[in-house]
Image (cartoon, rainbow, N blue to C red; front, side, top):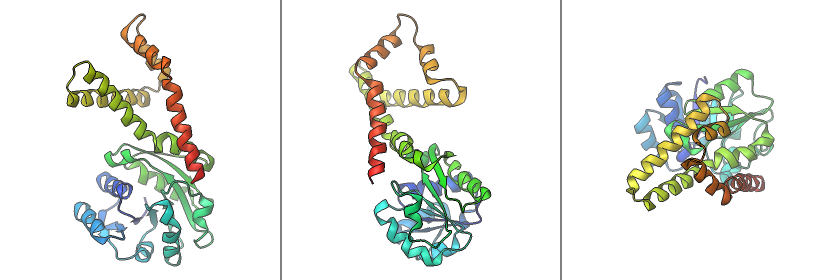
Length: 266
């Protein structure tokens, strides 16, 4: 693990990363530093977690062996310019900004800067995130493993080639929104059949959680698991047929592609 970690930005993802690190206990809270343009927001997070607030982005860079840039893509260039003169030789810059390539991230930084491009998702806030990581040639194998450990402290992480990041964006980056819509739709159907809405959301959400866990823990193909639920002439195969008639698979696949194409255009 890195000796010290800095997080620039205390928005949803910045908070999720910090809380994940603290809960996992992979690094002491007093070795996690945060900077946010609105200091009160950063201080509130520090009061909750025991991390350290710094007064400037430059100070954050000076203190951090790994510096996670959790800022919006549109302000990333100016943020990198701000820290460029304060980066240490062994600092690893980790960007979570959508749409910005490693080449674009490297442009305002010193030559040979170690850069990792990450694509996490919002379930990191409950310790069940999925993140892709892509490193440039200056990041060592040990640093790659340390960066992976950071993101695995609040979910799962895997290294991918940079050309796959658009598909990662469409799948795991935007995917939680599709799943929330699916949970809402499941609950709506149950409410129409007379179930109280609060109960319907609980049943729907737990069903999605359990089905996902079956895929991850059994190693079975999702199609096989689906077949196992579909008894001949039963209720489930009837429901699957209704989904197929209405283009369920094509709609979901199209959503992933639309998000990926948007990421390419950013």
